[in-house]
Image (spheres, rainbow, N blue to C red):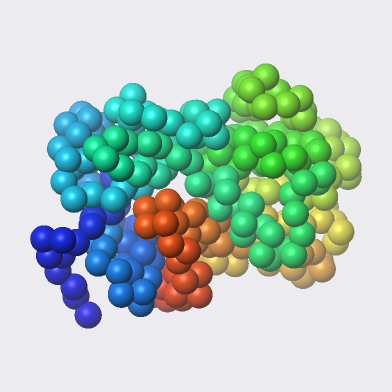
Length: 290
Ligand code: ATR
């Protein structure tokens, strides 16, 4: 059913570019409809050049909040009135609420990962040792949030080592000294991973259309590891299939997307969303793309 927003409808706006692939609008709109809430979630594609003007104009409308995605998660910060401490530490914002004309930025990406991890493993991240592959925007939010939530150790491995060094130093300085950069050799990786409970792939390796690629040497995946992937297209990446075949507990990437959306939904509305509805919308959309 297509529902058109009325005068009293609260808007939630997704800012990014491009947005054609985003499953956030149907995910949120489905829950608004199920809960009978007069909200409408709309994607607005905007280029960097127009970001500030568009954001400033839209914030003056009947807007409950915004989601922000690639490539604006960092640049939007200068337009905000307030910043949540975790978002300030991460240095990127994916959710903004508008209250009494004031805007406040949050980052729910890392929290989305953690909730997905906890749902799939029935365990917590506190005290665990993580081997993180990659250190782009997503990795940054995940690593900072893990450190914030008491991860014991985060080993960071990246194709470009200088970026791993920068991220590790930043976490040690801003949150707590809990990171270590992993050297490039297979043996360095083997030694680090042997002391870890969880492997997280936060690189784009394994993403459609290069779905036959593994982000790490097969011999490093041992059955006692929990293996998480942030790639969700395909839903079962080669890494997750390989890990599952070896007997590992796995954490698929779509969960992070669903739970970062759930955390944003709560911020926009003050109401907990229906996770099953969000999940069903996300899965059916992904299934139509496979
Ligand atoms: P996002 O914001 O989605 O996290 P990103 O900022 O482009 O995306 O980061 C992608 C990550 O995947 C980076 O860590 C990147 O490594 P580099 O820092 O060396 O660029 C990693 N990555 C992407 N493709 C890769 C490949 N083919 N091999 C190894 N690492 C790769």
